[in-house]
Length: 277
Image 1 (cartoon, one colour):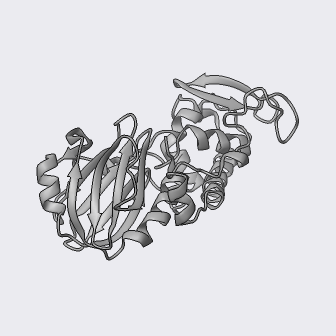
Image 2: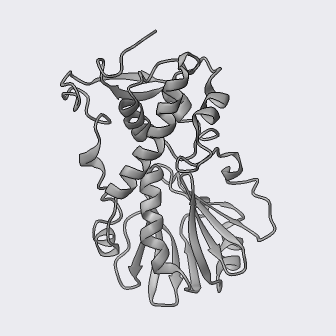
């Protein structure tokens, strides 16, 4: 599933290409992809609107329209957004196509069909997408040791699972929780209520540093993005532990191990991230 760095990359690639353009025809080939309102209403309300900008919140993308309505989308596991010339063949599993007034199309494809779209009116409360339940952004100044300790410090839950809680920190998933905990030197299954102040401070510093680092590593041009169908996430060579089970630790050389924490696979170094329980 794309996590915050990947979603931010998509936003940075797509937004300059759609900003200021008008949406013409909208084709929804899989009505269930539109979670709210109905697919027919969605098409009718979006048609003729001008795109003001695109923003991101956690793993959500938000297309702001000139009317102050907004389209919210979540890519989930396999969703992909592309800008392509209208005469360019569509990718397999393309479910929604927005025709733009410059001869290009904004296309959404999704192999597993878990991705969803919502359309909210300018004065409509968002009780549909789940954005209102998100916690602070990893790059927000509100993410401090005090914030983390106040919300997680009493939990008898593995710290890895806590980092995946979108109501606490928005946008971190399995990949970057592994990378964050490795850099911070914290064992993934360690209970949150056992962390001390210095460890919370370390996490509060490492989280924005790692997320910023991988956003930068993911940089890609619009041409390369289209050529690779939006699937070339360039951070892979820079991952230190995620997906590296059985390889030597980049810090100490010990063999990296894998375990399951809260139902999610976790790779860690048994030396750099000692189990202190």
